[in-house]
Every structure is written in C-alpha cells, then in structure tokens.
Amino acid sequence: MLRSRYPAVRRLHLGILLVAGVLVSQLAVAETAAGPINAKRLTLLDQAMQKQIADGKLAGVDTLIFHKDEVVHRQMTGYKNLADKAPLTDDTLYKIFSLTKPITGTALLMLYEEGKFQLDDPVEQYIPEFKGMQVAVKDGADGRPVTEPADHPVTIRELMSHTGGFTYGRFSQSQVDSLYVKADVLDPNSTLADMIQKLKDIPLRQQPGTQWHYSVSVDIQARLVEILSGKPFDVFLKERIFQPLGMNDTDFYAPGDKADRLATSYRPTEEGLQPVPNDPFLSKPQFLNGGGGLVSSMDDYLRFARMLLGEGEVDGVRLLKAETVQMMRSDQLPEGVDGPNWAPGNRFGLNVAVVTDSEKAGYLPEGTYWWWGIQGTWMWVDPENDIITLGMMQNTDYQHSRVVHNTVSRILYAPAE
Image (cartoon, rainbow, N blue to C red):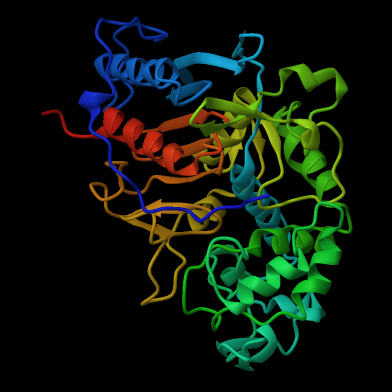
C-alpha cells in the first residue's frame, strides 16, 4: 500500500506557522507541565495545527499528549470529511499504515518470550523457503541481477531491524526493486503465505546485516507470527493484543457499523485537497498487511503506546516483560550500519526508531522511540520524561507529513530562545 520514497527531513521555522491571537490549549489543568512541555508550548502547538487547516494543507489533525497517567492535551482540528464538513471526533478512525509495525513487532516478541524462537535464529529455520537465498551483486540481463550466495542466513533480529536485505520495491530503484513490483509482492488479493512464495524467488537487495533498508520484513514477521502461533495473524492480534488492551476499534478494516467514523484521506493538488476513496478499508482484506494495514483510533493507539511506556504493562494488563520492551527500544543495528538516512539523529531497535542525537532528531529527547505511517500518523514514546505524543491525520503528501512532525517536535522540545 506504500507507494513513494521517504524523504530527508525538511525543517520548518515556527514563525511562519503561528497564527495571530491566543488559542486556549486543552490542558486538563491549565498550568500542568508535561516534563519540558508547558502550557505555552501547547498553545503554540494548537496554533500551528490550526494554521495547517486554515492554509488547506490538511483536512484534519488530532494531537494528544499523555504524561504521568493522564492526557494533558488533546486537540482535534479540522474535519474527517471535507465534503460534508464532518468534524473530527474522539472516536474517529484512521488508516494508521506503518504505525502497524510496532504492533506486529509486539506480537512477535510475545512469542519470543514464550520461547518460540531466539532473535538470532535464521528465518529459514521457520520459513524454509528462504534457504539458500541469493544476493544481487550487479545488474544483469533481462532484468535479473547477477547474484552471489548470502554470506549468512537472514536472522529474525535482522528482520526486526530492517537489515535483512529485503526491500519494498517502491522506495528505491534497482533490479531487485523492479522484481518486487513485477511480482506484486504485497498484492492485496493474496495472503502472507503467497508473499513468501514470491520472495523466495527474488534475490536479496544487499547482503544481510550490511545496510538499514526499509522493507517488507515486517510482513515476513506477520507470517512468522502465523507459523509460530498456528493462528491467522488477525486472530492472534485480536486475542493477544487488542482484546486484552481494550482496543475495540482496531482491525484491518472498518466494518459497516463503523464506516462513517473512518476519516477520508486527501491528496493535495493545484485545485486543493482531493479525497481518496475509503472503499478498500471497508471490508476485511485477504492480505493481512503486518507492515501497514491496520485501522485504529486515537484512544486505541494510546492504549498500545501506554503499554510500551509502562514497559509492557498498562492498567494491570501485561503483554511484554520490561526487559523485552527495553530490548525493543535499544539500538539493534550492527556496528558500522547507519540508521534511516531520512531520519537523522536516529538508530533503530526492533520495529521502532530510537533517538540518539536530540538536536538532529528535531529535539526529540534521546531515548525516545517512535514510528509513523505514510499518511502522517505518528507515535513518540519518551521514557525519560514519561511522555507519549500521538498524532493522527490522513494526508497522502508524505513529505508534508514529515514537515508537520518536525514542526511539532520543535514546538514541544526545542530549547526556548
């Protein structure tokens, strides 16, 4: 479902984002401070988000900040549907795209805790189709690269750190990427098992363990969940994560009784924002996209993020051990391998990025772990300050989404001038 390359972060000065006048921040207590985040910063946040709507950049955006067991900020600005001016509401549903990835990682780590595998186990131990993988060396004839054997089998740790040698087919250009596109690896009319059959015949893009490269590895993780648990991926998520956490509005689609709650996605054009039909998200898909397929609400995703902030537990419900969450948010990249080149100041853990240089990362505090979806939804978990920041929007301009994220992080965390 992802179609465009992630860009380098572009910086945006706050001065051109702030509108005149003073808006009332939706603080639980007006002078409550969330670590470094105070009432003044939250007012600036509200102003900046309202300007996004007023300028026609976004149809709607919902921001939330959770600190020390309470929501200290929630601001819904704009609409879930511009055609009938339906405003965002507490229960609006969003296509969260790659915010699915931390949930898939959690599912797999639950099975890790049960002793079903070790992180450095070869993936081929559980998915034998991956035995004897080849690696592209240079372009070859007829669109097939010249290959050499992988110097070691891809490990599960490499799957979870995007260093396994797989790709997406859409975010980079190579003969391997073209083979992904030709095979329609993430065909919505196929299954996770079908995806494996396609991948086994396509070389790895680079030797495993040598490069961070965004990929279908999280969909492979979803297939591992099915194999190791003996259950369909969606059933496992529902039984083991969504029901225990009370995430009653999270699934791979919005059923009929919830369809009117699903926010419309918008594509920017010279004529303004144009809607993208919700139809593909209104019935259960055949392909259970572990890397980007879930629909969720702000309240549901907050439950999941609170579990992470609580080191695996929220309100007496424990999904993971504290040491497992600590491992998830620790740097897992091999020595000499850089993190995402479009997210400076970050390394990578298990299905999440991890801030290692605050200033380069838009002033997110070191140790913050996070991810985002290609239509703009985002999660930042800041354990040092006991803060969760969430944002929900439906905007197909992924470059502008990253501008919004960087703007928000600077408003909330940049040193005061």
